[in-house]
Length: 184
Image (cartoon, rainbow, N blue to C red; front, side, top):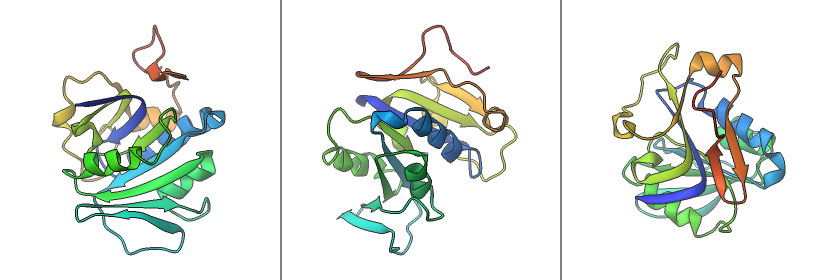
């Protein structure tokens, strides 16, 4: 498995669980750190004028978001303060190859915040945030592949209450602040 300390992954149990909200909070809290944001989704959409094609492979497509005002998660990342934002369209088996391809285009020291239901299958980030299904509508995702992984687990209710997120970003990457293991 690929270990990337400068990466923070936000994953969750389903739609409207708060993944984008948490990713945007982390980006805004670290606005001066030149964060690159990434959204990985298995939903393939038609090209839109605010997206610039970076790479098209049979199993994934990488777009760069150009607008901070479009109604897309990748736009919200820019509005929150990300220096760059990318949207990767890839099935769950292709999210790691798509992300790895993107890593080749991002300077090595750049911190990355990624919203993805599947990237954790092949990548160990500095911090993994799992938003659980409690009080969360949506179809729910199978996150069983993350069982046993060190993660900060929060609920949609925690997202709504804007709980303290014990996350540190320094020159070596993201980490959970020493002495903190859960929100509150």
